[in-house]
Image (cartoon, rainbow, N blue to C red; front, side, top):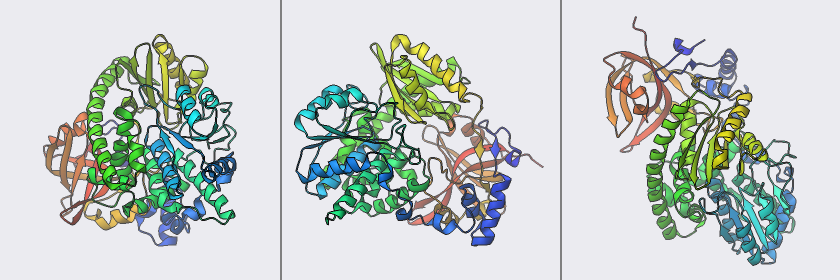
Length: 581
C-alpha cells in the first residue's frame, strides 16, 4: 500500500513505508530492549533482532574484523612486503588515482615511514595512461625497484605485470577474470576463486588487512609494528568515497575511523577539513560529499598523485598547500562537470530515458568527469548509465549502475567479446575504453545484457519512508539518537521521515537552483528545510509558489549548528500535495 496514499509524488515517485515484518520487529525491539520507537524502526529495517541491539549500536572492530588469512595469497603478500622492509629493498607503490587508491597508497607510506622506510609512489595520469598498470610504467619501476605493490588496480593487468621484471604484489578489489596476472600474490576478495564473503571491501580495507597480517608476522618474531587503529581514518574515507556498502565490518571500520579523524592527527585530513569548512565532528556524509571530491579532484583534472600526496604527508605546511590546490581544482571540476552534464542529459533524453541503458558520448568530454556525470544520469533515470568522452579514435568512459544490476560483469563480458578495447569494474561502477566505430554496437549489446538482468523494467525509484514525524518531535536529541544506528551511506541509507499535511510559511530560492523553506503543522512545531537542486526538477517551482496549500514533505533530519546553537533541519527530498479536507 502506498505510504500516505502517495503513488506519484511531485518527482513522480511512489512512497513506500515499512513492511509488516519491520513493524513487528520494531515493536519487539521496543519491548525487549526499551528503545524509542523511531530508533527501533531503523534497527528493524537493518535486520537487527531483539536482544542484539546493544552490539549493533556499539560495533567492536575486534569481533567483526575478518582473519586476513581468509583471503588467498595474504600470507605470501605480507611476508614478501616484510622481507623487502627488513632487507631495505626498494619498494614502489602503483596506485589508482581515486580516493580509494590514494588512501591505499597513503596507508602503506605511513606504515613504512613509522618503520623508518620509504617507498616510491607512482599514480598514472588519467588522460595519458588511463586506469591501472601499463607496460612502460611497470618496466621503468621494475628497473629501479625490487618490489612493486599495485593497490586498487592490477587484477586484470596481465601484460604490464609480466613486463615488470621484479616481484609484484596486487592488493585490489576489482572484479577478477578467469585467469590472474603472474604476480607473486594477488590479494582480492573479488577473485573468482574467493567465496565472496568479503566482496564488499574497498581496496584500502584490503591493504589494511595486509598490514594487520604484517603486524601479526612481526609480532610472531617479537617485533612491535605500528599502531593500526590510527590508520582507520584513511580506511573510513576510502570506504565511504568508494561507495562500499556500510554493512558488517565496513560499518565498524567507518565508525572507528570517524573517531580517529575527529582527533585531527593526520595533517592532510586536517587541512582538507579546514579548507572544506568542516567545523563539526566528521560524519560519513562529509567524507562522501566534502572531503572525497576534493581528494579526487587531482586525479580528475590535475596532477594524478596530488590526493595521495596530501593523505600521506606528515608536514602541515605541505598539507595546507596541497589542500588549497585541490580545493581550486574541485571548483574547476564542478564547472567542467556542469557543462558536460547538460550536453549528456540532452543527448540521453533525445535517445530516450526508458531504455535498459542510458548513455551519452561526446567529443572532448573530460575523462575526469564522465563518471560523475554518469552518476547524475543514473540518479535522474533509475537506469544504469554510461558516459564516454572521445579523443581521436578512442573514447574513455565510466558507468554507474542501480541495485540488482551488475554493470561491472557486463562491461567485462563486453570486453571479452571484443566490442571494447578494455573494461572492468564493480557491480555498481565500471570503466571502459571503446573504439569510435564500435560505439553503437557496444552500447546496443550492453543494453541487451542489462535488460536480461531486469534493467529498464522500473519507473522512478520508490521513495522508502521509515515513519511519520510531526515537527515538534524532530528534536536534536532524536537526531543524535538516530545517529547511533549509523554511519549511514551505501546499503545503509539514513532514516527518512514523512511530515504529513504541512503548511509552508517561508520559501526562498538559494543560489541558482536550491530552495529553502520553513514549514509547520499548525500546532506550534516548526522546522526549516533545504532542498538542494530543487529547481533542476518540479520540486522547486511547486513549493516556491505553494499558495498556502498543504504538502506532505519527506527527507532526512540533520543538525544545523550556527552561532553555537543546534537546531534540526530537514534535507528535503520529495513532496506531494496533501488532500484538503
